[in-house]
Amino acid sequence: MENIQHKSIKVNGITMHVAEIGEGPAVLFVHGFPELWYTWRHQMLYISSKGYRAIAPDLRGFGDSEAPPSSTSYTAFHIVGDLVCLLDSLGLDKVFLVGHDWGAIISWNPLVKPVQFMRQTFGDDFYICRFQEIGWEEEFAKVDTKKLLASFYFKRNPSPPMMPKDYAKLFKPDQTMVPCWFTEEDLDYFASKFHATGFAGPFNYYRCFDLNWELCAAWTGSKIVVPVKFIVGDIDITYNFPGIKEYIHGGGFKEWVTGLEQVVVMEGVGHFINQEKPQEINNHIYDFITKF
Image (cartoon, rainbow, N blue to C red; front, side):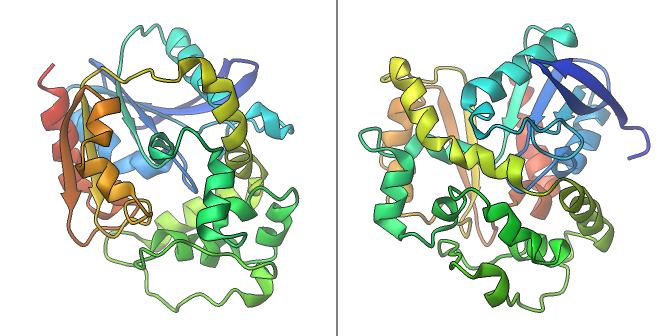
């Protein structure tokens, strides 16, 4: 870990923190919620040892990257713009892309706004619906950050996460020990960053879901044609959303992601798959990118 280099780079009007290690063809790692560049620590060390350049930023609003105050500054166009500018600043015109978490959006009904669909399906207490409320980050701030993150990272129940109105008052996490695939030091690192920055930036990604849906209208019908490998755990909450398994395995996924080459479902694995099963994910990534 001490060989990972850290730098701050001006991109798209913000300062972005970037972690990097290795030399060779570049692999860009993109985290989800509630995560940081650090979620990719295992993959960065492994891939760099195999002759690749591993690059993992803190996305805008996360960790040591700048967090614009406006909730509308977190659309898909802003995020993609940040990453394109990052690659330009590093002198890269092509990378292997490894992403986690946000990709589930592609499977939502294109005829209904995402938040409307989720509210109709799961109700107002569904976590994404709650995150729409300005000020909800203040409710999160009432809860111990370390315990809060542990309740996300170590969740084994694939049912949709619900957050009642008085979430902080009702928050009673299971007294779960840190699992063997995580350490207290890992949890401390994540907690220190989120305690310092809060959750306003990360929540703004969710607040842009409907705006993304509107802005992307011009790309309705567009398909992803680059080669893709999709990996998911069978107790990942997103894999157990209504209709998702049918979408992935019934042909819908392949219809829109025409470059889909393989779907891997890992048994007994949760949402934070790259941390829970690091060596397996390392091997999957390496086996895939060495084909090209």
